[in-house]
Image (cartoon, rainbow over all chains, first blue to last red; front, side, top):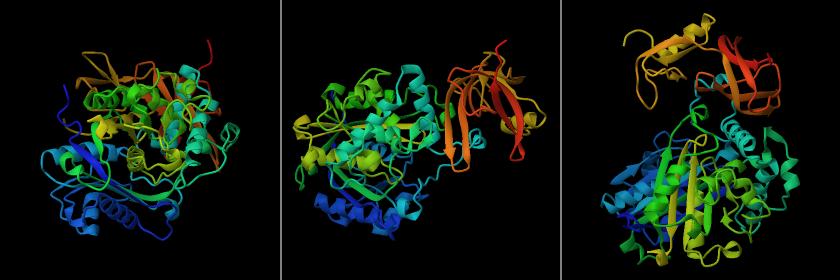
Length: 383
Length: 120
């Protein structure tokens, strides 16, 4: 039976601002510029927006900051913060609020200046009392631990991890808006400076500036707007731990729960997904999510990506913007997964366009592999 | 419940040189970090018991900083729970290595670290 929320709302506007380096600009400025771009892209006016969804790494009360900065008096707001996957969670709550008539035009937005403000990942994340004394580096230590376990259990190699970074760069080289472009070989990744064994600096995402935003409305209104709508077919979130020491199995993420529920709502099978936007804060993420979201069996993520299988021309298009590894990663990356999926579904992705695309999967990750939120977006052909 | 909570009690035991865990009287399940109830099932009949101190390395990384390299590990205690720690006195060890707990003083507080267990 079709889920009652399937296809009831759609992304109709997208915008970004200052992706890469935006010296001298504040998070609010980047967030507002992206928001206004998304609203204009939708063909709506600022006063049409009556729902605000936001999470950042610098605002304690982000929906209040957005309302004040843009001068909006929202009828509905949701500032749920589950780290970088917050925006995929917001897609679901925005669709619920729209469907219930609690708002008519939902704005999801984000902004960060963390590259030019300091060049390090900024996080409001509080130290975990039973981890902090051992001086883990947040967040890379957690991901390195997961990689070490994956290698031990499944024979995954550093070269397999490196393949993820090389594929991301291959896509970035087709995306004029990507921040890190140019040649990158497996040897470059393997020979890069080791940061947290087994992850080198080339296994880690960029630290950039950037704002991103999207606008959703109900499907009946979406049809009449400027761009082909990207319908929300299904979405689900899951989270089982806060600190990585409490993650039951470091090789199995909560995407094994969010994924199947999102697929079920959408009525979509993994084999029908032609574009997978997977939150690649570190190379190990992509392997874990390919496995947990049903693109290959558990433990086979490494062999799956070998030989350029997720690079341009490979068997599955993954992170076609260049990902957090080579395109953009301003602290919380989840918004930018949505922007690329919508760009691809509209057929606007230029040289990197996935031909004949109908269904895109967007998967956000937050914290230390803690929060997993999966969404499926589709063109009108999927309704 | 009155008086200090399990977090404070755990740290008081450590200051006295004892690495203690909580165990449910009815189910025998151990908890770590210290909690007011067993996660997932909620038993509150918790006693403090001395940890065996034996564990197996579940995952390990070496953080390489300008100040030097140090490992951060997750170990599975023989009693069941997992904890974050450091394997002291060695750069790294393979996943699966048997280790034994030791309480040291660091940054003005007691800290549980582990060292490789010598084969018998």
